[in-house]
Length: 394
Image 1 (cartoon, one colour):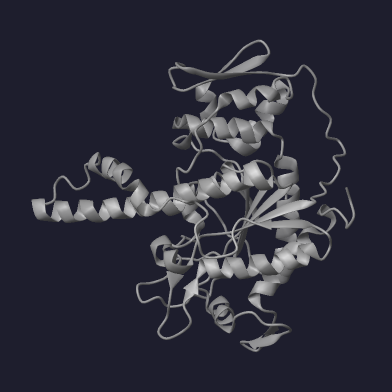
Image 2: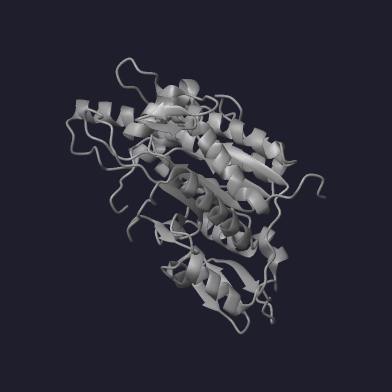
């Protein structure tokens, strides 16, 4: 990831295998809605620049068939192309009227399990879920003031999923037992290591896979927004004694860049096709770039720099915007923008978090600053600007 490597408690966990069971029949409505050149172009630029998906594809005269295996066995779906190319010479800006805010992570009693918690001495603990929810509530108020319908996927510290870690113990036992990583341990150590690994895997299946899938289901089946914004805070690796760092950066993610290893999974192939064919990428990128410009102006943060092995690639014109195959955006229909400003373990950010939310300006290292939560919320609202439908619009 270039000069940054994320802590265990940063949003990298959204690379989880959380998914829905694929239903390729839902893609039938997209037959003859996209031409072969358009399909190839967006696949190469956004969804799979590595070309890994093409290993599973066979092109016909005016169609493409996707298979489960590299040997082209087990046909999954055939897409028939349109014979005409759509014109996007002067695309209109989107006008979002229904916006969903997804404050990341569960928090509360689950924060330590999620590894989204740290505390220095007797200072106030830092729970990322708390920070995300404060910013989401403030942003909701800002957007509602201009007539936008705003929905929160959660407004407390309870899971959205009705599952709990114990519900995944049997699956965790199967997965861990199948691994060979503990086979060379002495018997007593092997037993202890497997027991701990089973506990950890059951927890991950709960707060990564099940929780993300439950939020996606809420968004797709009930809320059905014009735009979903996932709010997070970021972090950078620190030393063993948790010295605060001076670095602080900003990144905004859109969906894309499926990797070869991920495409071995047929569910991920189906989601790639679904996201590509729903044609939400233009509105998604417009929202991401608008928010990124406003956040960069408000925070004055440099962009995170991701290297070629990071799983993230630059897209569009804005240096802060990357495409990445995050489960939180993969499973959600429509445009999804995933925000990660601020390193929580940055020296200045940590001071601002300790100060909590407040009105007006306060001194931070000799610089007058807004509450970090209001800076975050105001920047997102300002960035959306022309992209939100005016009050009374129908």
